[in-house]
Length: 446
Ligand code: NDP
Image (cartoon, rainbow, N blue to C red; front, side, top):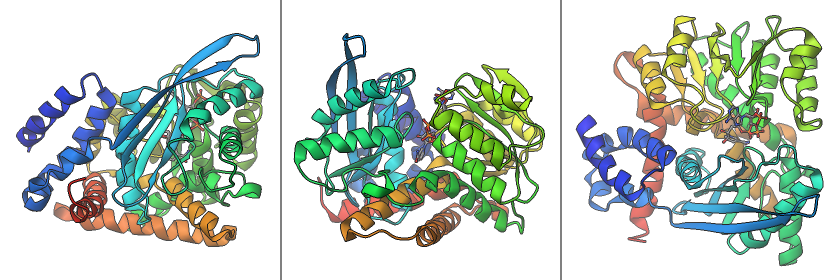
């Protein structure tokens, strides 16, 4: 198996030099898919995987804008349109200084499998810019978004490519991007998801990724006749995904011990309850402050420049960013009693960490399965926009639950191994792959 992966990856490395994150995500998929393809030669014969790892299109462009001091700033914008075999490109936009082609290609590649798993007709893409919204005024963010959309509008549309939010792109940014698209095109269409409810957004979209991760964990626990009540939970991040993971965990009776941001984490031994979570939401979404302020407000411990993985827990949710949980962290988590890791973020665990989770046979849910709730409700937002109708909270939440249950079942179907161990990585990769691969076979060599 290792030989198979190594020889496949050698060529991928030559074609994509220095794209570390992208190579990491391809090799993770290759580990599951290459063996599966040995028994399904049609995929090999038609070079489906080789075609899948090549983006259908990459758009890279200059984003000039003027800051509040009247100075000119220049950022780099991107959209990676990875695969449209099962639907129009769909995937978020990330505004963060670390954004580069490798990061966006890895995210776009992961996205095609995730979208396939939802069962909805969505291809995969991802985009963004190396722009940092932190410390910028609202008007600066608006001018940046307008400049970004002034180029991006040529490449997106409700039947072509429908971006959404991701790190650094929340309700505020989606509003500015949508406003500029509407102004240039002169039409009100569902070109973005994550919109405000008053202007075409779906209820439950802000909550969907975080709630979905928790629903996925509930499915895993159900297989052991267990539930979240009384479980000690640690969460990294304090953004959109982390906030709603915490909200649902609290509602289900779990005890949330940590949250973090890029500067450090807080450990609240008494548990973050809904009142304290409301403080975090205001701190992060309105005041745009640092998580450290939580420790000062509620008198708990703050660990600067550290991640929360050393805090003993039952369940860990890495919900901040890629490669935030390495091999040593995985060893620490498991030796402290953690028996379940569910990824709200995309590729937060390194390959070595994943191998340790697998060999320890804990419950491990990779991001492409566990955090698919966000894009699933984005898909439902697209349906509502097409219908020019808006469904109730209850209806969307029910649909979200059903989609997550189905993703879980697909993982179980393709990921069951000896002694009934469910390898969720293998399950998610193969289940996601088969649908896209069959569509590619049906559509010819394009
Ligand atoms: P947000 O921007 O709302 O929050 C990101 C959080 O992660 C913040 O707390 C941020 O801290 C922290 N963070 C960002 N970069 C780093 C870093 N390099 N090191 C440590 N902490 C960091 O983003 P989201 O919550 O939307 O996204 C979080 C993750 O979830 C990402 O991996 C994203 O791709 C994934 N995801 C998001 C979906 C969505 O619907 N939003 C859907 C599926 C996956 P700080 O405030 O200091 O920057």
